[in-house]
Length: 232
Image (cartoon, rainbow, N blue to C red):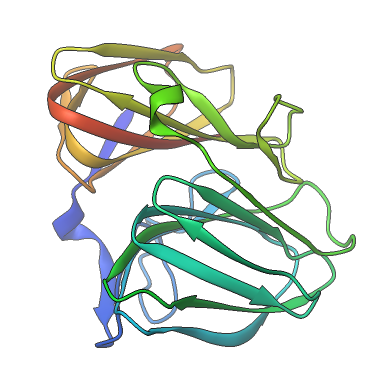
């Protein structure tokens, strides 16, 4: 099954400093048919104005993955961590028993990002944060595992039976992903136009996929920058 989620059907709100679009119910947006996708609970498509951002606020028992599309985000938290994550790169925060964090766009341009929340396998544990670079050249025409709870080499670690994946495709290129039994796949093309088993997705559309052994993706108009999750 492939359930497309066109960008113009997403929930959200424009707060001036933040233009947010929600693939799933979040904050004041509630859709009983879009409460999550398996363990994937949140996929927010955020545009953050220059010199603004999210002030300190708490989280617990959630794996929070930030994929920066353009610009950069500067993180700081109650554990004493501070770091800047730039376009194409990823940061992960395991909220565990609880953490306060802030995310600021300290740049002179808007920052665009995907914020992805995945429910952990178990509650509790000490909170943690990490970030790393993922050059797009390393994922040209193939999947790169950006974050994983399955001990994938070089991926940022999360505390969930899940993977967050990235790939880039040029026009005409094709890519597949083998989806195991009972797994759920969620795909967004940050840029470009792709076709997923005959279903067309434009930039920033989502697709919820399950009961499919092999996900087949073809780039119709590129370059296409793909981000996906594989969860229970």
